Image (cartoon, rainbow, N blue to C red; front, top):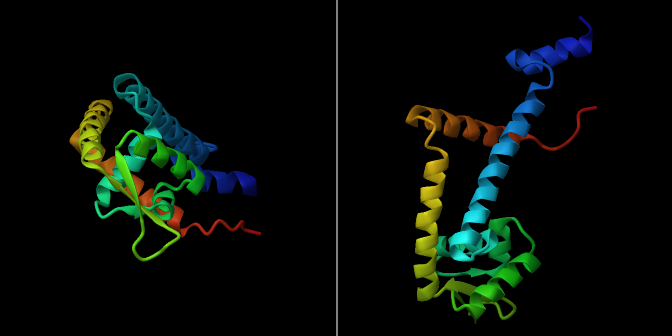
Length: 165
């Protein structure tokens, strides 16, 4: 057995050659299918985009409000992406935008009462859809998957991104 083959066997184990890539592709496929279904259902049933839902969800978790910078950091998107979504939500009266009392350059975005009510309905539907998509897994399988994804999250955090020489 050549050295590269031995290394592959050590890393891939029972999954065969390129097992880690196959695993990543399976994770990506599952995440993509779930995201596409959620996007389509929000659009079809509520006329809402997933980015609007994501902004409202972040604001729901922070009733004191968030700056645009905090929102973009929480959602891992650019300030420009957040600004457009927030402006649309403000136009529809789902959020309010007020100057920050501590930083004249920043604005604080908060859900309005109408926004909280709208988000509550969206969140209920979202939970139901996720429950339905995961219904084919037993409770033990969901727990195991959650634990394994937690281990993956720690592995990703430990990866420095530096290539080995």
